[in-house]
Length: 407
Image 1 (cartoon, helix red, strand yellow):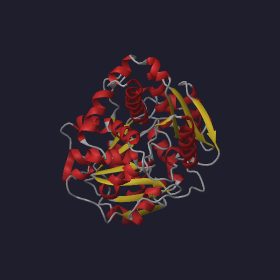
Image 2 (spheres, one colour; image 1 turned 30 degrees about the vertical axis):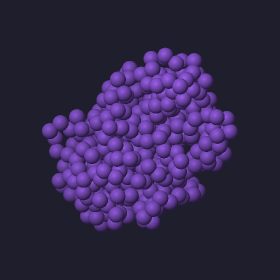
Image 3 (tube, rainbow, N blue to C red; image 1 turned 90 degrees about the vertical axis):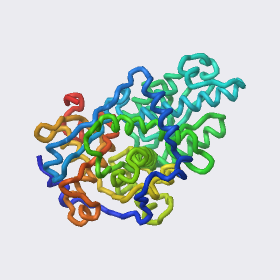
């Protein structure tokens, strides 16, 4: 195993001058409170098929990289959907259906009522829509199918046909939109307004808050699991988080901040340099959008518009913003497929490896390594957010079939 691929990687780093090193501020409870997080975990952990995903200690890779440990939260097996997104979209669908059926019936309809099928007729009259690069739409489609709602998924031209088929297999109708992800978001919102449908997006904007908040709450099932999986082991010193719109990063930052307080890990946001809305927001000190002119191979991170809720957390909760180029993605996927020494080998998709790729590249860049406070005592946590959600793309990039790997 070699880390040569990372030695000349193109990285951009920005240190957040608004970083809050103290305890989790109560002012952020309006974004994502401990009670909201607890409710999500209680509900999702009761679903059929639930089991905690593994937290791998990649000891050999850590030794090669010159740090104490690399912890990899592997989401490839989540509910059979292949990614962490299974946690957020489906949960937000459930809560939206309970709220809408309550309005239509004038009764206090609980999420347990929806899950139990007590209002199947009313649910079948609700149409759920969302825009997606793949994984979020798959979760929304699964949730809609599970609870009995109709579902339309909007996809832009850069989404692979394999990811579209995975959504259609869950009973949803795919609507193709010219342009990029942000244009598919706008089209889904417009069609929903015109037809009385309901958007379940992972991106919040002015006047649209509750579904994205519930999506974020669903994601924190991962951090609840990590808290238990760490047991008595030392806490991570650094977390390298995928960017995207900021929903995942905001959720993970929130809960780990609540858990560890002023001893929280150092949060580093990692984005493709072709879709760096959070990096640019960090520089500006406020949420800014970017226009994507060239798609990144990390399809799930091809986002130009920042989620308001995510940014509310990240503007003070993350210490650093980092961008990476596409050329270190495939090497990172191959590295995990091959394993390092006795480390487990497994399939990780293009968007899954962004955090790890950023960490490994930073460790090979002395200036950025020092700026991030990385050394031989560092314990790095990364989130492997997806498995091989498009097996054809995975095999093309890695050279082996995903189902040939053990994990």
